[in-house]
Length: 331
Image 1 (cartoon, rainbow, N blue to C red):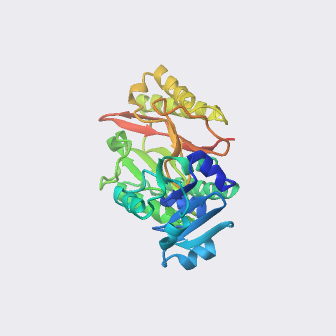
Image 2 (image 1 turned 135 degrees about the vertical axis):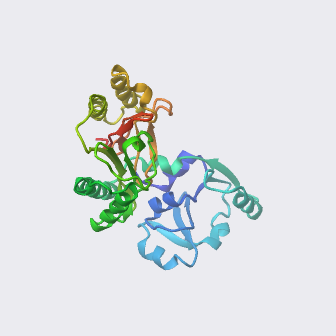
Image 3 (image 1 turned 90 degrees about the horizontal axis):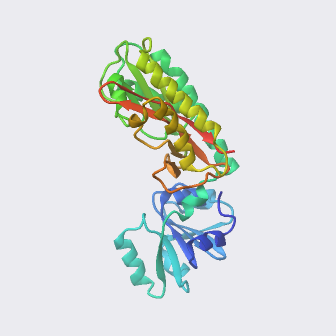
């Protein structure tokens, strides 16, 4: 949820001002996509600082209540500020050094994840963009069986996914699609190659459309021949792990609990050792944001209107891999 007041951010950061430099966070707060700039949050104002390239667009598109200024005016805006928080993972040592030399009376305080925490719970406009991206992704998946013909390559199918996304009304894709035929599916993040489709190949697809900056993400398996007994076992276990995890989703449930539900089902089938990644992750303006659904991650309670993926997978080296993934809005 976007901060209702600048004081919400300052309270979280425990500073007198907060300087946002992460480009995704800038877009979230300002409503404008830029390649450089800042959002400066102070007790009584929020200022979007851009250079001349973005000044006109910023004034037209900026969110209500956000002022627009020039990046060269940062020093004057920070005059009298004793403690200014900044996003430590997005600021270079050189840039921090310049700030300290110019503003000797301001102490710069490292902060991490302040704006990202506000981004977790989505607002109605964000959910609308996500639902459209999700709908387009489902339509793309529906088209895949029509092109699964012998001789099509992984790269060719990946390119079709890119074309379909735009045809169906998306900005493009949320990430480079994963298209894996046969044994290539045993690599969770396989990059498409020139391998040609053959009868009997498992086809693993992981793709997502992007709409107004908001990402979708879905994984499906397609079969080109009758399933083997092992393939049936794995697919059935993954389907149950996914559905039982989704049933448990609600505000307040922890990331650890959901991960435990899925792994316990795979463990009963003797497949847990082949599940080598987290159960899922948060999604929004970034394809990976917010909570990580893993017992290895920090224990976190899910928030209402947070968007998460549920994506159990089994990867058997030298044979095949399968991942089934859907996105869920926490309600």
